[in-house]
Each structure stands twice: as structure tokens, then as C-alpha cells.
Image (tube, rainbow, N blue to C red; front, side, top):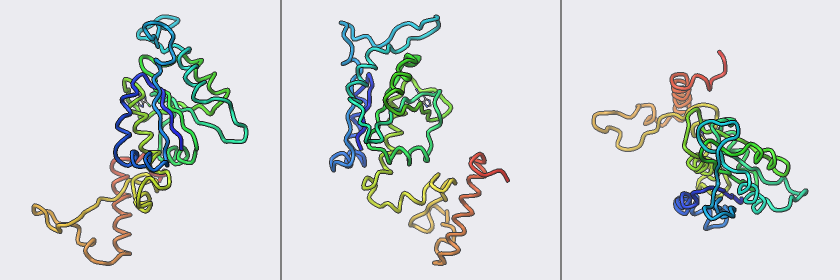
Length: 233
Ligand code: 6GU
């Protein structure tokens, strides 16, 4: 998979050199590049923003540099390929979910456009949609200063689902959200730690009973903290 990010803070993505994603890049499973939006400006101050038409607080990102950056990254459309997906992180977008991460993990080329200030000129989304699949995506109902932290989270969620990135694929199955429920609590040795016992069932060796207990824990947890995930009773 190829991943391009457009941002005014390309250094921010230096952390992708380390950890699981770093290894995936070294082994060639993921090809990653962070592009500096200011490299696509032509004025002495490398201006990427301007005041909003219609007035109001804050600044809006100018369409010009975005258009040139995306021209460079998207190139000529190839009708034989499914084509790139261009994702703009935005608190006004559709919610990012495990389902969306699974879907995006199957694509060959993802492009992330990190907005700052009050957002990007709306015409950038419209124009980009004429030659790629465009999605506005939100991490949740709160506001970040810019898209960079959100994109980092999305790249991690998507990247670990690409075959070969996570060493043991079985570890991807029994985790929160993969079956629509939160995951069950985990324990390791010692069996008694600071007076707290591991639930005896986990020491019983009865795997059917353990599976049932874990499923019950998943339901109880989900009912308690995320009832919205459960089907209506
Ligand atoms: Cl994806 N971007 C920004 N800027 N803020 C957010 C967000 C994204 N998701 C939640 N808040």
C-alpha cells in the first residue's frame, strides 16, 4: 500500500519510522511519504491560508497549494485501477470506525490531506472528487487543532490490518470492535497479585467455559460503557 500525507507539519510523521509501521515500511509492505503543503506555494511567505469570504473568525486554507499538491500526488487517472482514496480528517466528517479501517486496508493508495485553521476551501473537496474517491472522516465528537494527530491514528488503525504488518494475525481477531463488542479483560501471571486473584475459571483448563465467560464479560462491558454498540433489545 502507498500512503501520501499532505501537511504543513511533515516532521510530525517522523514517528512512523519506528514501531510496527516502521518495520512494515522497511519490509516494503507500506510505502509512505509526507509532503509539505508549503512546497506548493509560490509567494515569499509561503502562504497557505487567507481570511474567509463572508467574514467570521479564523483563517481558511487556500485552494491553490492544495490543488497543486494533489495534482502531483494523484497524477493521471488510471481507469484500470480502483484509484486512490483521498481522506480529509475533519470533525465534520463521517465517523472513523473499525469497519472503515478494514475497508481502507484493502486499497492500494491512500492520500490524507491534513487541514489546519478553520478548514480547507470547500472547492478543494469538490475538485478532488472529480478524479478520486473523497471522504471526510472524523475520529469522534471533539475538536483537534489540525488533522495530523487524527491521520496518525487512522494510519495506525489501517496499517495494522494490512497482511504482514502484525506478526500474529490471530491477535487481530479477539480484540475490541472486531465482533462489534468491546474485548474481554485479560490476565497473566502471577495468579495472585497484591491480593487480587485472577478469575478462577481462567485457571480451570475448561476452554468451553472460558469462552463463555469471556463472551459474557464482553456483553457486560459493552452494556455498561457502550450500550450504543448493542442491537436494540
Ligand atoms: Cl479527523 N480532525 C480534526 N481536526 N478534529 C477532529 C477530528 C479530525 N476528529 C475529531 N476531531
